[in-house]
Each structure stands twice: as structure tokens, then as C-alpha cells.
Length: 167
Image (cartoon, rainbow, N blue to C red; front, side, top):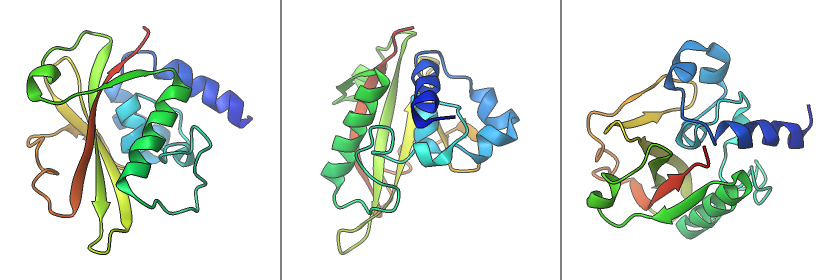
């Protein structure tokens, strides 16, 4: 299967409502997706696609991230390629006002003391009123403390976006 064919599958998937059970019940999906795949609602089992900048071909897999601003720009590029509309969310009241074809994602970055980027993480809020997350090769599930990463001095909250699907 070509990269374009894989990308076409993901483009279609992200326009449908998320199927949380797929991340937990299908070993191939659970083991080959991460927080980014979950945040956008993609279940295509290819972990290398779900690195910021990979979907848009803006960042190679072996190239390190250089700044938190770069992560945000790469996220925008990937969302554009997927055909997902997005807008910044500035307060919790906006989060509560989402339609059935919308959801919220928060992007965090693990930043070392010297400024290097170690990793990124996404969490997701759907119109069921729950924050959820998925870590690489782990189950997806509800977060009981959605501010957990806000309290962690190593993780920096970069942006909160409202995502709108077509379908």
C-alpha cells in the first residue's frame, strides 16, 4: 500500500465519529497508534504516520523537534492535509459548547531544561463531557484529572483547538 493510499484511509477515518472501542479491542490498532492518532480519530495501524509533521511530509521521522512553536505549526499542517477545520480555544466555556461533529484537543510538549523537545502528548474532549487520552501501545480511556499535564512542570501546554469534522 502506498503512502497516499494510507493517507486517504486516514483522511476518511478522521471525518467520522471516534470509535474508542477500536483502540482498546483491536491489538493491531492499540499497538500501532498513539495519542496523536487518537486525538484526530485515526485507527489506521501505522505508528510512523502519527508523529507531528509526518502526515504533511513536513518533518522526517529521524529529525528532532526544535521548538514548541514548530510543534504547533506542524500540527496545523497535518490538520490541513487531513481536511479538519480547527480554531483556537481560549477558555473552558468554549469547550462546553461543541456540536456532535466537533471535539477539543490539547497539545502538550515535554520540554527539557535546556529547551529541547522530548515528546508531545494529546488529550481529547468529546461532546459526551469527558476528557480521554491514549498513550502509545496502551489502551484509550477517560482521564480523571484533565489538568494532570498542566500541573506537571515538564509538560508545557501549547495549544487547545476545537476540531470540526465534515461528517
